[in-house]
Amino acid sequence: MYPNNGTGHDEKPPPPPPMQIAQYPPAGAAPGQWTTGLCGCCEDPSNCIITWCCPCITFGQNAEIIDGGATSCCVGGLIYYLLANVGVACLYTCGYRKKLRGLHSLQEDPCDDCLVHCFCLPCALCQEHRELKNRGFDPSIGWAANAQKMNQGAATMPPMMQGMGR
Image (cartoon, rainbow, N blue to C red; front, top):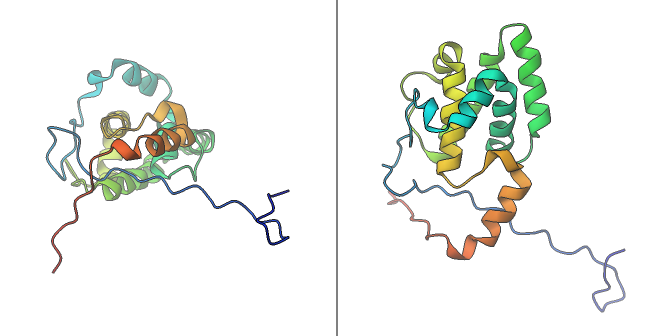
């Protein structure tokens, strides 16, 4: 039951405020640029090894954060696994690279998202994982824990700058 608001009717508590996703680049990064290169897999050796041995884990973690919790790590990883068994995982995963770029206004670099995923899938998954980490997310703890961490730190986050209007 929900608490009584004094009117004699039980009311649902208000929903928590939505998590604000940081749109600003990390310190030292240029706006619109990836914080690491496509071939920088060894910058995070543990993620590189996990991605090489079981890319469905890295993809599932990335997908959960990029989708804002709408896709769980397990579901994303399972879909990746099933599609990889028939050789078309890259057609699914490239859409998440596009979503990540849209969330953070990143350039399509070094080429089209689907080409990156078709020819460099492990490197692309590692780069996306590093990008999320460099922007303050920890894909390994899931969306809910990241949302809680970000909402607790919202008071200390730098202000968001509005672009010039036309």
